[in-house]
Amino acid sequence: MKTSTSFLIFIIFVFAAPSFAQHDQHQPTPTPTPSHVHSPTPMASPTPHVHTPAGERKGGMVHQMTSTVSIGDPMNREGSGTSWLPDSSPMFAYSKMYEDGGMLMLMGTAFVRYTQIGSTRDVSVAGKGDRSRFDAPNMFMAMYSRPISQRSQFGFRVMMSLDPLTQRGYGYPLLYQTGELYQGQPIHDRQHPHDFLSELTATFSQKVGENQSFFFYGGVVGEPALGPPMFMHRPSALNNPDAPIGHHWQDASHISWGVVTGGYSFGKFKLEASAFNGTEPDENRWGFDKLRLNSWSTRFSLNPTKDLAIQISHGYLKNPERAEPELDHLRRTTASVIYNKKISDDRNWASAFIWGQNNKEGEFTNSYLFESDYTFGKNAVFGRVEWVQKDGHELVLDPDDPIHDDIFLVGAYSIGYLRELIKDKSVDVGVGGMATFNTNLASLTPYYGGTRHAGWQVFVRFRPSKMKH
Image (tube, rainbow, N blue to C red; front, side):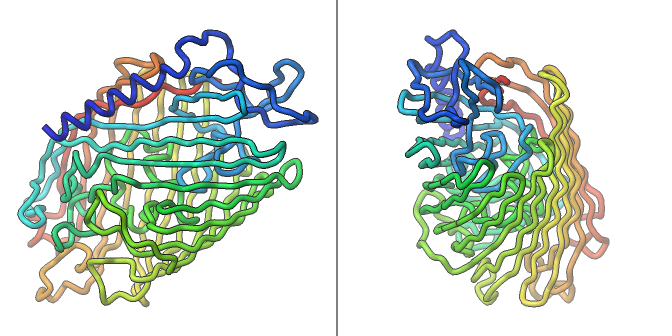
């Protein structure tokens, strides 16, 4: 019943949002970025989810839809937090323009599915959960920006998830996944639910020159400058319902209760630094955590071409794991290359390679991910390959087992297919399936019942249609 309720809420969101623009049938004019122009062109009516490409002339002016984080960046470059995607990345969203130059965008994704994982391990936590489940991973996001002057703007972002309702506190089964707590017990072989409020931030940005700008980003909860764009925001993962099993090595700090970031963009590359709360969220997914700025991070981002986004980042996380209160700090280093190629209006290929390393006071563990998505017409083929090193504490092995302190290499290999039933009708509805194969070392056989396992899932995916170029 709870899953059905949350699903109904999402459907209302998806079908209500296009009402922004259903009365405006002419070609829209997006938020202008001045180019030898002294004032924005006022909008007479809201726009549908279409925008003019950067650099196209309309009425003698050059227009560009700009990022809500930094006025100097194109909108398609905006990832989660302050991260960058390739400039050619597709956007699935609704937008509304205001006469004062303001812009509101709504986006979201929900998967209604049945999933089942392999192995013989008891993957319950505090007596809850099994190796199969009906569930509905989801996220919703609203972004607003408004120009303050010809060269500066204010932005606001909020992201929410109904995971606390659809996943309950113990999450969904995902072999080898680790991290966070439920009823005081560490979660293993399950993906924890995300907080209801996942981002609540404001931004200010100022153009310094034609290609340079600086920005400030901060809020109650948000994402520091650490890691690649979070998996739900990457074009290479948009059709994959599962979180990566290396999530806590790569992009897990996307929900930090307390964050402040400052950055300077030189056009094709950017430097930024954050102060943030390095302690993972508590298990009360509906409430607010205590705000802290006890950790720091830095990130270098480079978009050498419109199809590439590269980042290298490093962070110091204080008291990162609630399941390991004795761990004083952790150092995380990440690097990623994201590629997106728009082949035609209905063909797109997106891929990502991500490396993440955790240094737990001298214990180094690494994660490697490659994922890809090829969309053609109403079809999409996607997959992910992962190798992650996890210790016995993270896998929740018996503390009296001699191998408890060892480090184990685990692997996950997924391949999936999706067919759009409804496409480009303001909402996209696709049905798909995915098979996953898992491997672990023989030393883990007493826990997992073997070294090779297989799982599968079927799902229906809902999201806004792609913004047209």
